[in-house]
Image 1 (spheres, rainbow, N blue to C red):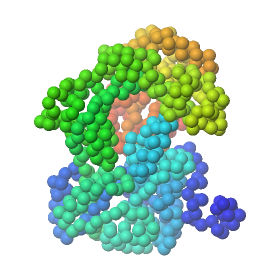
Image 2 (image 1 turned 90 degrees about the horizontal axis):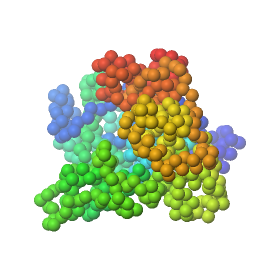
Image 3 (image 1 turned 90 degrees about the vertical axis):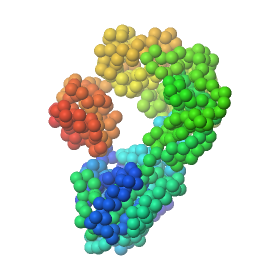
Image 4 (image 1 turned 180 degrees about the vertical axis):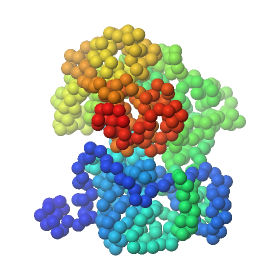
Length: 623
């Protein structure tokens, strides 16, 4: 209704109308933006002793200093630019000097004002885009139901959402923002940072909470208070920031080549807590690997209640001597995955027994075997029900056959209804068979059948990856597809022929031979071929400056993901490697490049930055 009113009566269309928030067209790439005011990063400190040292350096020159202490939001830093009160541009931090224009996506965030009343002629503010915790958990639940890969944490989810080329997708992610710095304000002067935050709040920005502290002791207390209450925030934080409040003092202190001298970011150490192992359970994965998991007494850790912890494998359990009933210390590895650090043997109950992973699959009862080349214990039964759903879900997943709408929940329904036992059964499904299923109406059934039919046209590498051959990931699948060109040629290859392919070693080659050597797998290939699936490589490898060259990607690329860059390299006949060596021809470096870039410089390997790399892609010749 509002859209119609504004269309028929243009005078009613306000600049901050809700209809202006989601309307931008999908982009092919993000334009680069040079920041008028550099977006500096902060120096990290990891202990109160380091914080006190920072304070000593400040008080030597400014004994009367005050600090603004603020939570450090774990999100994505952006700059918002306004001209005559209108939001005209928003950009990511990038490398601090150059970022990406994500204006249309930022417009979808409700707390980004599109129009400011009483604003100066020109205004630039800096804020942190984040995904609220509740939104993150709901989004992951939805993705899990669809069989899609889960976001590791809210920060990754926010970063991925803000870099969507289609603003409509970004809008669905319900991002938020907190503004924490005034970058530029023409025509107004301020003496204190806290004064600028109050001013921005008056302009209707959502501003970071802060507390002014007159002494180092007060700052330490506030940092501890923020850390102790981090669960109460609606967003993830990865530390607290202490900033000199006096803006004139900031000018005096200035900046190093990397950081402002007047601020630091205190990073909280990982939380470590004690809990009790109630039981150890076994999960059977898609490839048959038995993975042990500790069920523990619920404990609050890094913002969530933890009830399980990974135990990796039998070697891990034996090395730490973890038993049911033990009191253990636990933390989140990388603030994400709960893991057991050690056992408190002084609290071990009497008569506990060392734990051994069972020698039979807990799902199908068949004997298990240990990989000769690793620590994994595996069920090798082709009929194991635990592997069936996971294998079928993997086959349909986005990075494999990319069948939209065929997630784990639907796969389970199909298996329970005996409509799918092998991937070939997907291609025999009809609308009539699907409609009676729970959560499956006529339109959903039609969409699913169409998506399945569309997947028949996929390139060979997708099918090869979808088959779930051990150690044949997407990268190896592309290499095999490009080298042999048909599935039949791969099936007929011997070990020597397979190991001639880049990224295919002896172990992977043996896994490929073992997979094609099984009668049931050969029958599956016949069935898929009978259903009309493409089994040829559709990617033309062009002779170019990439042919035969090895590239290593490091850092964050601004205009494409590293996976997309690797695909482009391989399409042009190059190889994307994960490590730098004397055989590397080029290193492609983005913001955040670290040890790989340093090693390239030590070895004298040419370094391409993204702009050079894109020119190389477009021109088809060396940079």
